Structure formats: structure tokens, C-alpha cells
Length: 438
Image 1 (cartoon, rainbow, N blue to C red):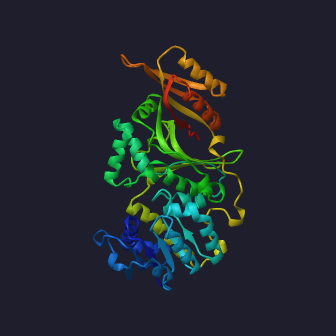
Image 2 (cartoon, rainbow, N blue to C red):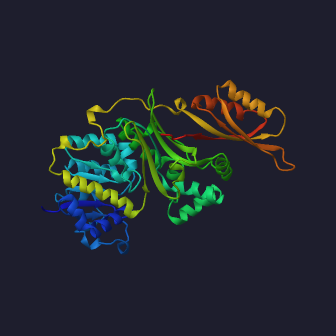
Image 3 (cartoon, one colour):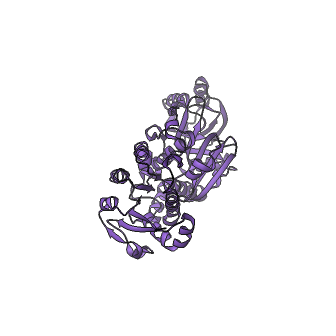
């Protein structure tokens, strides 16, 4: 059969990696796909030719992405530009032209996926987005196909390598957040503006996608709660270790009786759990299904070749399905489009979890009793308390508390009351806790 012709948008890290892997493994990929996959055209405004193996195999390179999308010889458009615009316009144009699309753009899918999938369904084309979540880890294929027999109960994932690298360095070396962030930027793990990584936006994009795949609901990025790691300091990391926990920046999606939880935040998890031992820039996703039990998916969550691996896996899937009746293809969000549920995504105030609290108070009689009284009045039960003795001459003491499970709204009220006490100095640091037991 004639090779499938693709149009590649973007020759940056992932785009360059995709060219390299397609060239290096061309024979193996053709054996799997049933025919060759060739890059007919590519568009990029800024790239480094000397760093891309196989660039000479591309038929034509220009800076006009819309010309690639409109080329009648291109059968599959691979969007690796990133961001919302012009990626959205390019993808919608490709669909309107009757072309299949493969993308690594988690922000695009999380925000515009419902519209994109509806347009693709109307045109009978496929959208592949395996590379949008967790780099080279095939978590989307696992949820859509490998776990299709299961009623998914919950997902918990380390899905941003930058945040995981920072927390690992803080734990292993006792370094402050700002110091490690600067190193992450120097190493290329974090952008010059690290907001998307350290404040949970990147992870929330990915969790939105995983939640829809797991529970058969429309994509709802705007309802995903997100909290970053910038308020975590070395003291919190050390306290967690002393108590038998580790702090990880997790994305958690859980099915409950009242609706769906979608939340990204720093989380204390027992140090014996598998996720607690995923370090550095690595990613991991733990999925609990009713039939299979807990399953863990671990690997490189970013990088040129790992992400290219996922991009090309989608290209192989699309190539295999080019002659398949569109109604018999794997649905984009795992469930048939007319079977998506209207199960509500719960507001964070309605979520129930346990908490780690750290606060600084004036060292005088009755302070601890008053704080405990407030927690009790709000229906919050304390599991453990640790008070660090002040250094000689200091008048302030650090209190660390672990609570039993409680509704977030109750905890918010209690924290506001505690922070209003004249004996409490500054804000209360709150980290949610999860056991992640099977």
C-alpha cells in the first residue's frame, strides 16, 4: 500500500523527536501499521536543523501552517505547536478538510476538546491525543481500551515532572522551593514563566482529560480545582517525612455518591505507597478499577523521544483505521458520544479528605486548647499533634496536626477562625492527605 502522508505542525522538542523516531524506526513502524508513514510537509517558524535526525526526509518545510493543513496530499495533520491559538484554528480547519488529527496539546484538548470531538465525529475523522497526558506513558490507551471492562473508581497521578522534581529535591536535600525552581529552569525542566507547572494548571489540563476518559463525562477544565506547590517549604517536607509521609503534587479524579472529584493539589501520601516513591521528573498514574484493582503506569512524562513515542503510536492507530467504518472506531473519550453522563463535577468545598495543618502560634498557655476547640466545634477530629519546642529566646512555636477525614468547607471555616486568633501568626499551611489504598 502507498505510504500515509502526514503534515507536521511544529519542529520544536516534540516535533523534532517525532521526525527522529519516524526516520529511525521507519521499518518497524511500517510493519506495525501495515504501510509506511511519511512526512509530506512540515511547518515551523523556529527550529534547529542540526538537532533533528531525518529532517532531510521531509518533502517540504515552510512557515505556513495553514498551507500544510490545506494540502490535499496530507491525510493526517500532527499538531505539535501547543497552546490554544492558532492550534485550535488549525485543528478545526484540518477537520473541516476531512483530515485526521494527532496532537500532544493537553491545553487544547482540555479546553476545546468537546467542540473538536463533535466536529471530528461529524466529519468521520479521528483525533489522537495520547501524547497530551504523561508523555510516553500510554495511559489514554489503557483507559480507553485496556480497562474498558472496568468501572473506574479513582485515578491519582503525578502528571507534571517539574513539580515532582522540585518536591524530590526539597525532600532529599532539604533545599528551599525557590532554589530548586531556579535549578529546574536552568536544566530546562521549567519554563522561564513556571506558573503552569508549579501552580497546577498543566496538571489540571491533563487531569481533566483523564477524568472524562475514566467516568464518561464531557471535558470540564473550568471545574477542576487546582492548587500549586509554591507555599510548600522545606519544613513541611521534613515534617511529612517524620510522620511517615511524602508530599506529592497529585491530580486526583474520584467517583463519589454525589458526583465526580477533579482536583490538583499538594498531597501527603504514606511513604510505603508506590506513588510516594516516584521521584525526579518521572510521571506515574495509579488507576483503581472495580475488576482489575489498582494498576500503576510509570515512565517519562515529557521529553522529545518519549512524547514522540506517544505521537507515533497515535499515527499507527490512525493508519490502521483509515479504512475502518467511523462508527466502529474507539470513541475519543472512551464512551460512545451519545452515552456521556451529566454526572456533576463537585466543587472543592464538598470534597472530603484528611489534612496536614502547620501553623505558628505564640507560646503561651491555652493556645493549643483554643485551636483544638475550634476544630472540634467545626466537627474536625485530630489524629495526631506535633509541637516543636521554640529555640531559646523565641516566643513562637510551630504546631503540626493531622486530622481525620472532613468536608473541605468545614476545614475552610475552621482555618479562617484559627487565622483570626491574635495568638496565631500568619497563614495556616494546609496540605490534603490521601491513603491511596486499593
